Length: 47
Image 1 (cartoon, helix red, strand yellow):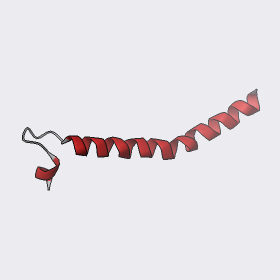
Image 2 (spheres, rainbow, N blue to C red; image 1 turned 90 degrees about the horizontal axis):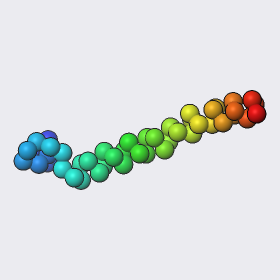
Image 3 (tube, helix red, strand yellow; image 1 turned 60 degrees about the horizontal axis):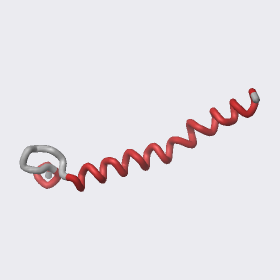
């Protein structure tokens, strides 16, 4: 399994790196509103 994800030096292939980056970006995009909305609501109450 790992042989298909790694190149000869043992580093992840470009395709694996891109997929991992997309997963991270997706997780940030999905969780960002959960963090940003309470902060915006708090700032709206103060201002």
